[in-house]
Length: 307
Length: 257
Image (cartoon, rainbow over all chains, first blue to last red; front, side, top):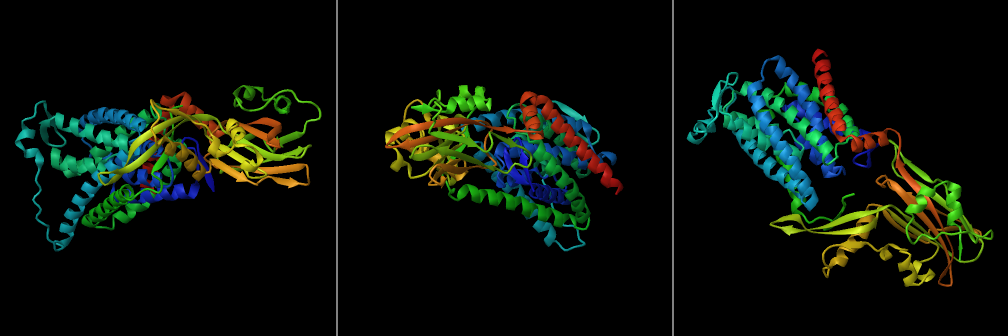
């Protein structure tokens, strides 16, 4: 059964969309991530124009994050003050990112920049996660592996930054510039890649800001909801590429898929989950890198000009 | 020459399309003994949620011997052709060329190969055949290899099923009646299309007829599309609220289950 997508202007199988949403939802439930980094490339792969894929994925991540933040919020695992600082940076960053997006689209480099951002960022993060989880899995079960994590927040330069602020929930007294800049950078990625960028935000909050692990996920989700909502709004207004029909189809699949993912995720060990997620992130990066490196079928490609 | 287009357009009640007709589209008053009469199985293609592309039937009768050529043109717009070249190990866009006057859709069907029917200058003048389409180059100067880009538009459009050449695809039922099928893929753009039928004999046009064809989104698809264009901020807000609500609903429902 086919469904016509009014903004993407193409007809796609309903089952394919439900399956895609279900698979991404399952993985996001399993790994506790938003799944935007999987959804955008998959949508492009099935023929959705890249701008529509990015904007619609951002919309989808809003739903996934709301669904996930609920549990964390009930457990009081959200640092709203830190989240707000990240968010202020994120709103500015995603607005700048959307502007960048329209400029890149105009000069014809958008597809390449989307693909390159994915390859570089997912490749780096995936590689780091994989080495760490392999090390953790190799350690004898039962004994806690002694991993000396370098916490960058102890660095003299970071301690010297002005505008110090107290974050009670995170038990931190750090410069407000840190979460603002971090939020800004992640916001740019959200606008260009259609992701919540939780896979980048979570490690940065632990190692760079020095936040306690327990409240990191909830706080990052809190920030991601508003940043991806902002990205959705801005894309709806400037690039007009948010396809509600597509988003709804994906939502239905992902909501159901996520429940199974969460259930199965509970049976796995933390290191196993991180290892699998790392492998998945790397696989996406490699697949996109191959596409950029291999010669295309046709060197020329066509785009509709400004109407 | 004898033209039928005008009357047929009035019959269709589609005078607004008349103004948008391509400059080459033949039209004018028609005498009663018209040598060419044609019509489409439908003058409106509605893009609904189940639209996967469609076929239209164009049929007609000729009163004089000759060869038949059918041309369908979509609305024209600006197109950008980009070329990827290896750059630091990656295939990245290196050059773009823009063209105006590019039909979104173009189909030609003929009873014989075009070159056997009419001289090249006639085909060029009426832009019959994909190699005779004249796109307007939008650039400060004309680089030597710009022809590559021009040809690429046609090649890419043919690959996507938006340009079609069906030589010999006009079926004659006896000496006078003919018909041909025109295919539209699911990606066909909306707008006012023009269908032209030519009767050609001895290298000249004996009769010609032009009929409009409308392709429009309908029902919920059109409402969603129009809404996204007319009220982009409200549309965005609705999209966000929809996502927030379904995310919340999922969290609440499945927490109990």
